[in-house]
Length: 372
Ligand code: PEP
Ligand code: MN
Image (cartoon, rainbow, N blue to C red; front, top):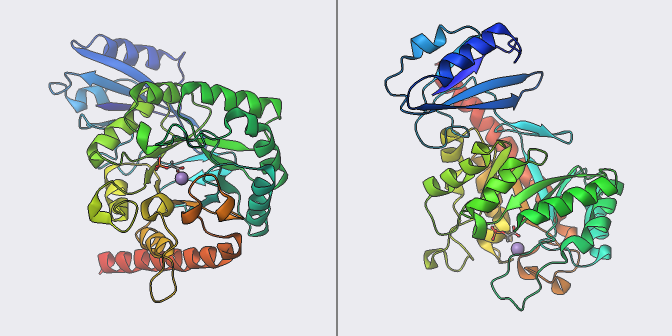
């Protein structure tokens, strides 16, 4: 059960104290207080965990300062939608909006290799009006002898160049909680030229200790990849670890699932789950065509599979696209064969805009049908 307080109630008010005292004395129920940053104010949500089945929502609603009471299922209490359309969803980070209504493109390097490639990438993005990118510094690799990413040594030039080219948010995977501190220290030393969205990779979807650590910090939002070999429900429960520790600024990313049934794609593309995620949760939904498809193959129409699946995700309402680009894919140290070229960036962005316009028209059509 979630108890939402009126926005005017402050922690030192009498109403707040009375209500918290009452709730914390309920038998077999523990309370957890979450502050939710809305567009204009901070809202307080109190989570009642435990034996809430015998509680009457009307009794709780009658407590001082309570605006609404929502009964939630056991699963993904914070990130879930729970058939409630009024709760805040989405967030702003470093001037960029993320919600189930927006669309942000994160084109960039799978892995940082040289400062020159980082600069060429960022310059191309700036020239195309883009303010987000992906840049991997810590790479989780199948083979221990493969390039593992430059780690913290590349952060100073990546952040400095990002600032120079007007990049506001970089999606960057972390595989250990120390990486969050390294990113934080480096951003501080450089006086915050850009922002970072911490990426949890598919190999760490159920690394619960990493999730708890990343969930405890609230400075950086999180891009959470679906686990490649577990059910959607298991991935959603894992994402909830972030929120249950205090960080609910989470974007959920579909990146395909591992099965030979997806051959010849690297993974079985799962973007049909975009509307499912929007129905079940309040998270913005990202698609990762690069790690789903894994190649630059194209159909006889000349359009890359990568672009076809991107359009399929966007036409269903995806809110973010994470895609590998590289100025010289043959020199890339990770995932070169699936990278798109900088000369293909405007084609890609135009194709994205077409698919988005189509989605918006589909929304209008659905509304017209409902009004009939
Ligand atoms: C990545 O985005 O660089 C990556 C390794 O993706 P995933 O965790 O989905 O394999
Ligand atoms: Mn990759």
